[in-house]
Length: 340
Image (cartoon, rainbow, N blue to C red):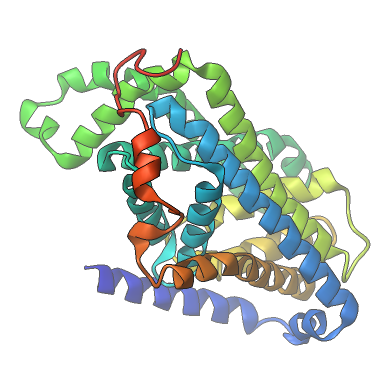
């Protein structure tokens, strides 16, 4: 099944890239890579994305105690970059998340709790980008031509529905009481119920949860800053808030698991979005490709982590697993287990 999924993603990625690239002059992409100013801006974008990795590690460390789990900052940095590198491969972000779950469990955390932590982290990141799209919708609507406003409305409604669904998640156990018992035994329903039952912890520790959400928003802004820097190679940079309004939906579409690391989807979305702020189509695609390369270069520390551990995923980010596990308190999902 996984081989078929990878083959479909490869086909979709190739098709999208061909549809986008066949209509533009690729010399703009090469121009960034051949000129000193282009390489400097690319290096600056990589630097922003490396800082983003530090923020992601801090978010990981801040969020773990919500569920009674623990991980040091250095280990979190290694785990994040290793997962980021794997996510750039045909294995996509699913394998990156699996690697982080595996590494967290090697630090003495239960596999089930580690899985819930990564799922909740992914959900908060998704909530953050939905909030950005929702807040930027009025500005995006004012920039859009009449013939594409229905797309903006669709994106806005989707984002609003996503935010509403996240807010209603704690009510899921009550809603599932009407679900037939045989369906409640399904694995997906069981995981959804456990996630919903654990939502009381983020609500009780709302300050920590709010900090995690703010860090997620900062990470998405780092992506947009990297794109903003690259725009300056071709054109006078437009208003930053306008760039946020048009790039945030592109970042949301990148999360769709239909292509490898968002390639193809990102280029098409950037071409449409950046054209709304006066960036030429070929320049927009060159900027998107350069951003993809910057993301790939920023993930290379993860390759070093994997090589240093000789591909042993269990040892990723672990200096002394036994010592860390000994200092890790017993994981509990019950109310009041470790922090109030």
